[in-house]
Image (cartoon, rainbow, N blue to C red):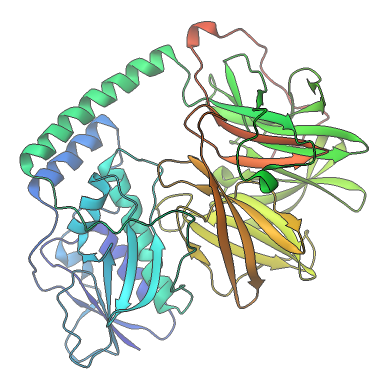
Length: 510
């Protein structure tokens, strides 16, 4: 297939080069570049803001938004003959009987529309359309809200993922409907140079305040909440319980997050990410739990040279297994307990050479399924859902033919175990539109097979009176006890000394 990529030759970015390379690697694609100069583009004031943010936030200088010479695309032929398909990134190609897919952000074309949405604090809806019909769409996200350049680069990278998936035939043409009104507001105008200057001044002041805050507080700092369900969990209540939540105490020098309880031999044991502020790295710890709370403090059960989190623990074949997040090692690994709750030894590497976040397993339709968000070609860690299936949880795991199954910062990333109710799978998801882990969605899976995946988001739970703080990020239950997590404040001067943690039960180091 002859494919033309239409872009503005006066403003070529690393994003365009990466997109062209990915498209040219697709089987059967003959790529040509239409780089005629075009009007529009990011203003000088915005480029100045980018330079300032690079300095004050120490951002890398070689991101997807980096300006590069047009000659960087010289390895691709120039568009001349009519193409079978044109991907229009700037919105100036007239179909005239040709097949044209136009990329728009909330209905407006061009990178300036994307940046205007970012500066307005909106969650851009990227849509590839042809003659008014949607070919593919995704809600773009970032973990760097408030930093225009970092957000811009994340969303450019995921725009490339959306386009490549659409050309490859894997992209979806609709997104899960959220249980709240969607924004129909027009795309805001790009701020004037004066307003961008004010924003730059505020960004500098905000960065100074952040630095001062970090001198006084350990940040970020998460906390775990727990309660007895009394037979009614959040899937039944669809709201925070009137009884509220009790906190799992920490000493301020560390935080606990990603709570995963498991009922094993009549005892509930809670596994958590145990993040030590001094080292800037997390281990996995565990503590026995009863109706009156934890029996002491969480004790280390697994420590590796890299960051660990999301200890997905489950029982199978009379043994306890765990798939922790090891994205820092670019693997998804399976561990088995030899001295529960410790003694974890690695049994297998399920996936390798992949930045997969929060791998979550479920049995459905006689097979095992693995859900995770994947960061490919840069971009956010939380907006692109991939699936794999296997005859057994030990593998071998096969990637779904339609990966990425979903590009959606509001519903892609897992937020805990799936549960079965009335013969259907219910899935907790992270809603990261406002910020990473800001809210918790409860979704019902309506399709999960080799042909595709669909879910209906039925509830979104936010922090508030029932759960103080700015985050609500994980949901799990076992033995009548339910756990969530969110944000907290931890003054540095209240920190109490504690010995360096060591793994219990002979945890393996790799």
